[in-house]
Image 1 (tube, chains in turn brown, red):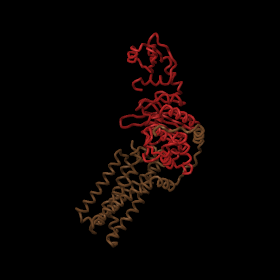
Image 2 (cartoon, rainbow over the protein chains, first blue to last red; image 1 turned 135 degrees about the horizontal axis):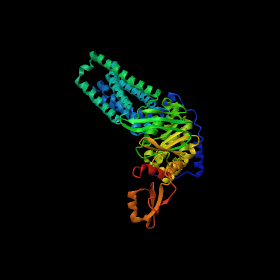
Image 3 (cartoon, chains in turn yellow, red; image 1 turned 180 degrees about the vertical axis):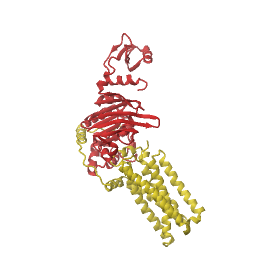
Image 4 (tube, rainbow over the protein chains, first blue to last red; image 1 turned 180 degrees about the horizontal axis):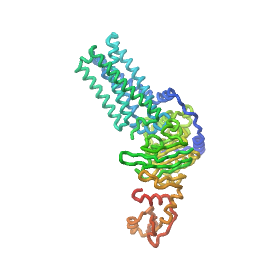
Length: 237
Length: 289
């Protein structure tokens, strides 16, 4: 098939050339929500499917042992690992420059992806909690589990956005390494530091949620500012 | 419409990639000519505001583009030198995706994508994955995405690389037709591309414009320095070592050399009309070019 493309007839070609020359493009759309719908059209399904795949893996892990549902939070970085390719694909496939010179800007595109990934993660977390309630047949410790889940998720999400902001060439592999080592870290923490999961240690977790929420919010504010102030975001030099 | 570049400079540490470059561009086709590493791509990236200058500014109708944001990007079309694409997307999907990012309303985008696919002869492969395309076809997708928003300023970095001669001519003609009341800037190291369509040529070396003017103006800079000399084949190599040879053509057992030299290189040498290629080679030297 390569290069064996039949050329269109002269009339079609002339018609299309005059069409592109007399384009008169209408006013570009302004609304973020309209843009979000466009991004969902192209990237929503891959984001949701990869998150569902992560959810399936976490559910399998939870069901594989009788105590599996106690350590659901250990696997939260997998949800970052699942969406990471979408965030870094502009860098990986060198489309970032083209994306950055559109009306959207790299920052706004990242923000839209963040909304989609965050929404998907919220749905997955809810389903995980439903699974936990089902397995333990009670609502006991549900709030604690939410807090346990938030800490590794927020840590990895913050790390991913920091890597995107810094536009490192090896941002994607670094992010992958952080997510996978987080899983191991939290797994061993659960095994070796049982006191961390006692009610008396809840303060540490709440503090961690607050710290990482602040750091994540700072990254998001940076993205919003980058968009408003027309700064480049996520482009590797 | 006027795009002005005012003492634009970019440093990477101690290395100066672009050095106080200034120009004023009005509608027309501008060719940016220079060897690899001359600073063309850095300049183009700064013009697109995807690279922050160390100093200087780019202004559109008097407004600094650094502060214009989406208003500037709305009138901009850009094809980077290293055109990337998502391998899982078909040509039509990729163009629709970029159209969405450019904020083109969906119903309108569909028609625009179709017209561009037609114009760039990509309609038969519109639904094939871009990863299966040849280099030339990928490059045409790159040009199509740059034209999606009917940009008033079109910046193309090495647009003809990877295209076969027929495709190159067709693209050049399309750009000429497109220019009209728009600013088209194309960078290349292929002199003939610039020669064919550029109204103005900027020759860049070591981050600076070392020459600028129309094609005939630049060619005239080497008037009286271009010679043709017919020599036996066995002596041709010797001449090549001694002078800058712009062209080498066999004629039977003889070889016709096109020589760039301030003085008549030999009593048999005949003066000839210079072309842009000669000027480029004269100022850069055959090796550097």
